[in-house]
Image (cartoon, rainbow, N blue to C red; front, side, top):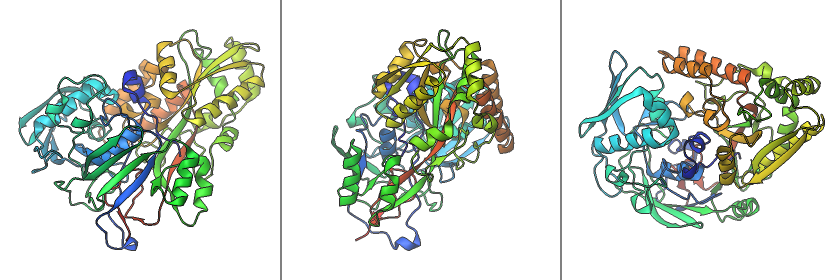
Length: 527
């Protein structure tokens, strides 16, 4: 499993770009699972402690997936990644597309019993605009967010913005109590303010060991049973969900096989072993990750010259790298798309010819023209926190060595790696990462907004994003999405290796589980 990149608050907007939205939820119990059973505890293995339950200050993978049990947004994505009303009851758009009027659902309460009001929504969205990278990118198009009355939110735009509702369903737009958002440090709020409107609330948290959520009995569900994903009806059948921190993959797999935990999302190299175990259920999840090499555009980098980036793309043997590190063919899609095929609004085949090009001799020639001749040294910065990243770096090193180019690889923990990339913009040449491929607007997509990390911003790219935001129909937006992906392959702000699918492994006793990661409303344990 390609684990989502944790974004650390201390690294600000760049790290937020490197995270993607972690989808959650699932359909209510299907017929083969029988009638739901109320009660019991589900034990879930997670690779790290969430560190924070503030999804603006620390929108990491585990934070997001636990937080999705606790918090809700005005809109959420369904099983097809389409935005649906959640805390919003209804909304209208003015004829000029500049004013969105959102009516809130009535009688919604936070987990401390306080009623949800429009003031809570305004405070939460203003914080998103100021402190979350997607919000910062959306904010220039927003004039004001106001509360005409306790049950109404009005969003006034400076110019029409086609993906606004999708962006209001993105990570960081969770609604918190306004009183808990005043005077917060950059590290966000603490446990005592981790209060939302979702079906589960925080019960206990032993940092680095485990976190326990308990059913919120005051939760008021929506009625739509068939939306799936993060949207629609949410039934809290389980009494509690215990998230156990299990960093070691061997321990994680052993615990699955011996019944210590009921659900986990192991790494790709464990997939075939677990799939062959008849005592477990193993299946793929929607969406996935875009696996990328990121060249540095900054002056002084070996890849500031576009010929060097073209050469790198021609040099890298993507099928060989994928075969060496991608695990099962069930999990690896050899495509240059930056969106998963499940993400139909953004999936594109534009640039596939560039993705599939492989010509080491021409690569060597182009590198020489760009001043990266035999004897030169390329500096790769990577991390040991995600083993795939380091493996890709070594395989790139092998490719470069074949044409006489030396590679220096510096390996750090993830936070230090990101700090190194941002603190010394010209001090590195390449890095390796992966991004969520199920995101639904350009402002959410790191492949399109990496300029603050690798200096790849350009007026042409900005113009295409502006064109997308000005779209008036899905067909027009999809046309621009194709242009955006084609431009990415022309500019080579990232070089995509593949798309990776995700998977979950869990006990057959877990029923009603959909396929949206580590969120477990609508699930129960068979007696």
